Amino acid sequence: MTHPSDTRAYFFKIDTTIKKIRNALQKQFIDSGFDLTVDQWVVIDHLYRNPGISQNTISDMTTKDAPTVTRIIDLLCQKGLTERRMADTDRRKFLVYLTAAGETKYGEVLPIVSAMRRKGWGDLSDDDYQHFVRIMDSIYSNISK
Image (cartoon, rainbow, N blue to C red; front, side, top):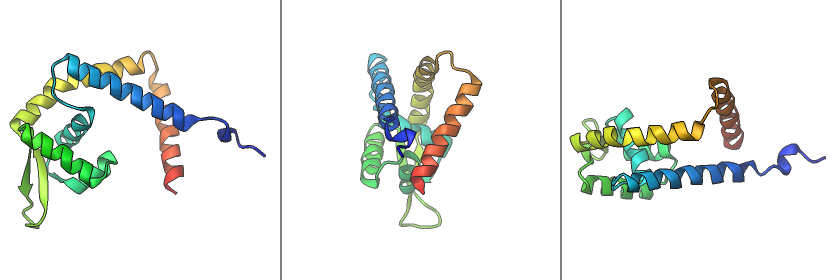
């Protein structure tokens, strides 16, 4: 017997939606004069919410591989937006922080990200959001098993 999900390309729908959002957000960054990629923004956002986390933690949070996260952080350091500091408890480990310029950049870019989120969500309700989160969490959990 065919399962309903066998013929529903929901992975494709999720993937194309994510790509559409990323492309639209990147265009907004460019149009607003921000020298920032969406991936760099994601790292900045995580560092703003979780100052002093390791590159491995950033990798886990963003689901990006370690070499990619290292490259992103290197670029953000070159731009003066982040810095690596040696961990107090383990001198072999570095923790990543936003600089003052990084915190300023976060504040400048957040309104653009928020506007894109509002545009994407449109007139969907809080109830719609709860259903969306439940469904996405369920798919994530099922794939993780």
